Image 1: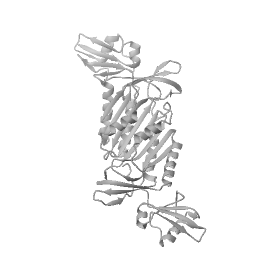
Image 2: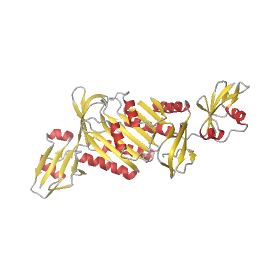
Image 3: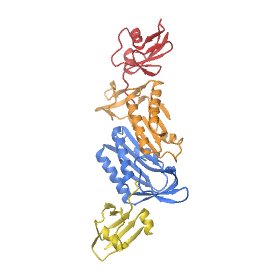
Length: 145
Length: 145
Length: 77
Length: 77
């Protein structure tokens, strides 16, 4: 189980491949992975940049709590959350959630649950830079978007 | 959209990273990936090998049909199925399903739907080699396993 | 008419062959009758069939040049 | 008592500071009263708070050495 914050662009597939090496290949029948990237649009506006503020210490603790709750609900063999912080450019990876289990439903449902909790509960605040040079704080995540 | 069959072990994360390059990074807000590997156990028995038989031509067509149906239901930007055929060893990747969309729910639900259909409908037949050297044809996939 | 026939998985093993070519003095035949012609008895229970790589039924009609496959229920990927 | 205070996001920008240290002549204070002490008015609506990096409420009691954070509702990751 690992929670990692990155202040520079990260390669999500390389992180998944690396994390997977710690889990015996014969046991981990299923891996479920979600990667979210910064889009260049939101609510019909063109977005040219994103500042992702976090609370160092508390953000990691909250992510670890979300993972621990998933581990208590599903039989997981491993779990990785990687999250970007700071100034982000369109196309950069924002979030990676990966779960490993012997069975596919457990891996899939745990990955989905961790992602939804992270999207709603984790201490992150987003400020968008729009095409006209103005900034706006994002008030909340739209469910499912 | 791509369907690929492999007769040798493949690196699922390298395939995902490669397929992703064809989709503009700024548009694909969400990637959802499932990787299934061969376990060394099934129904309490130790499994030492797996022979995965397919129907060359028809298997690819059925997988393409499953992908096309998902593309008609969800707004996907890309989709990749990679599947192993022939003799497989424990720990090898058996199946990869990857979907890209602007939005996370579409990517997740399409990936899950494609995987479930592939697990139940695709023309594959599995013969397991057990620890005592005997073989058995697998009758069906257990839902969720 | 000439028809290419494929067998898969347990059925392939039990019959001892993966492929054969059937030559018939008719212009068409059902998938079920083709089985009777080739094997001398009724198709086994739970037999699955495909014609030209599309799922089919025992009453699907086969014509010259078609590809017919008989197989057990699929295990899935 | 001495308390470390952090502000985040829009609140940090509006207050013009990210951190401050509060010195108080008492042994304990509620998170809400600490805000009144520092800013001279009632906490704004929808203010979120944490004490020692755990989510807390305005009536949570703060003691010497604690870390208090005030922030707007989280956007999520």
